[in-house]
Structure formats: structure tokens, C-alpha cells
Length: 82
Image 1 (cartoon, rainbow, N blue to C red):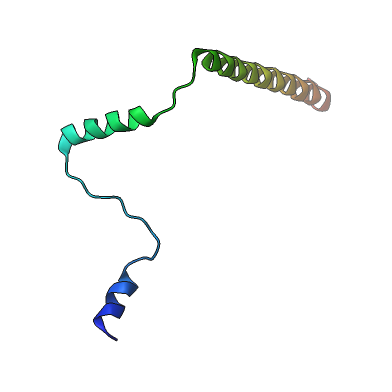
Image 2 (cartoon, rainbow, N blue to C red; image 1 turned 30 degrees about the vertical axis):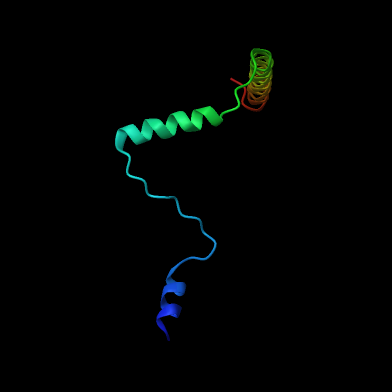
């Protein structure tokens, strides 16, 4: 076995590794600012619409859970009378 076989066998193929930068706390905040500039923020209209969707889904889940709880309670009262 040659030396090239040993190095290629120990290194995983096709797996990208993150670069190791030593920037400390200053480098951390520099990276945070750089990433925040890449973010595509939603418009106020989109935010309002999506908030409405979330609240609507939450209300629907509350209604479904309440109805199922009442149905199970009624069923148990029929099965196990006092």
C-alpha cells in the first residue's frame, strides 16, 4: 500500500468541511452581521398575512382538541356510569 492510498482512505470523499477561522468574539459578530445581510426579510403585509394564518391554525387546533375531548368525555360517561 502506498502513502497516497493511506491519505485518500482516511479522508471522506465529497464531504465539505467548514473552514477553521479564529476570529474570536469580533469575528463572531462580523460573521453574524454578514449573515444578517443575506437574509430576505418579509414585507409588513406578508408578516401580517402569515400571522393571521398561524393564529387561524391555532384556533382550529383548539377547536378540534376541545371537540375531541368532549366526545371522549361523553363516551366514557356512557361506558362507565357513576
